[in-house]
Length: 265
Ligand code: DGL
Image (tube, rainbow, N blue to C red):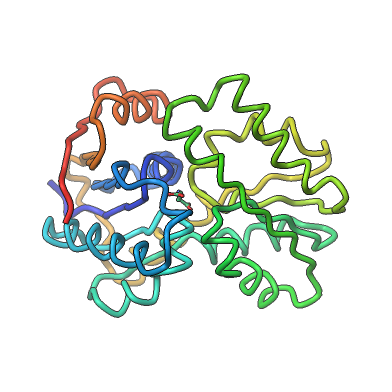
């Protein structure tokens, strides 16, 4: 097997980034690790998120990954610098690419950010957006009910739409033209989110921009797989295998993905 790229998330959210990796980097192997057992991270302390993130990356490092994608905004906000410091392979997060895509797409530079409580509290998006566009206005909104909807596999349900509508009502008096899905679980709710926001609002998911950064990094370090050897994707979860496999199959449209249970630390 080609030396793989590691991808981590607190649960199934990082699969939204893997979906783009499978499209854009078909010559690369992927090792995915979702910590579904301890999800959500978004309501945990920074210390816990940092510790859990280090445990996940250590596990993938033992499997000899060549680079890492932290496909979790919460872990990126809290632990990106720590992980870069502790491990020698290149590490990409999702917040800089997400902020960049939003700034590039927004005409008015009035940008809403939807994320977990921890991500919103960290102000990582606000800081990054203002670094790239100092005249921007940022409207952050914590959406703590969204991740449990996705993890329970209820992302297509009517009750999900009701919860999303209730949450997004809090932005009703804000005049933004762009909304960032600042949590990798949220693209699975994109249809509902779109229908609960004004029609002119553009929705930005960081997945495509993140994978562009992965591509650049592979080239920069000369570690892309040009040999076109057989590639492979393995999906590890710390939670129940069957429900995780159901979401992998549905979201990635794979018939028989290689899904395995794993324990941490
Ligand atoms: N998918 C993650 C994120 O992008 C975390 C969700 C959670 O565990 O709360 O923030």
